[in-house]
Length: 305
Image 1: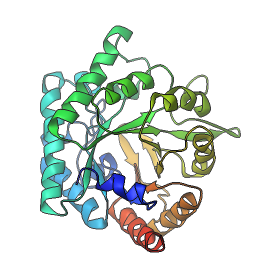
Image 2: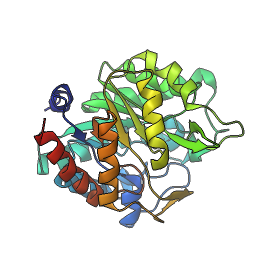
Image 3: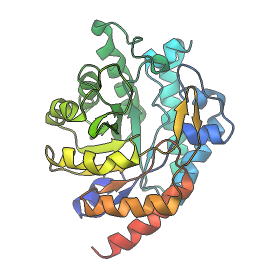
């Protein structure tokens, strides 16, 4: 079970992962926290978290991602839940396992880990001497709780992202390196806005040599994916994945405006597969219907392999 996703990639076939978790929770009525976003939902609305996992599995996901994007100590602590960091991680993994047990046992569970700061405030990171310990704590909690791999998400700089990468690698589990991008003035830069744009190529030059198992383009603008794939392929010959966002964020909520229709996402994904991607899914704004469309398209593609 834990290696079925690796066997799929080794066979040259396409792996389908799930869609957005936090935005799907919001769509189902779960309030988002101003600081930790969806990180506290495993405590307040566990049954909804489990149901979202189950719906993604039934839609055809081979891999589901835990609701721990906003669960590091720096995120939960900023929201007043610092004493519950361990509980949140263990509960998040348990809910994913419960969903797997209720549906399809072959599905792999990826533990989400992001170096995003509290409230997405770039000035709110912990002191440099403490930050690595924050990511090590989350990575080990995910590993000890039984995830099959670590999915690093929204790595987009050369200061904080390498620390998260180090923490994930120390677990000994497979690591997916997830970078986020957008196009600004003809350049591919990190997704998050900043005073001085950070070129994604510079981020990849630091992170890719650290040795991930898969490199993914996640929570990225769809119109930046093809160029980002080229940047990755210039530096990496291993498996590449794409799970973009659609809509836009106004803290703490997602705005489901102009979200790409499921069939259109599947059509875009077919082009990414032609360009070498072997993992596809969705991030913020996408839901089970998007994964169902991807599953259908990728089943057709895989049948020809």
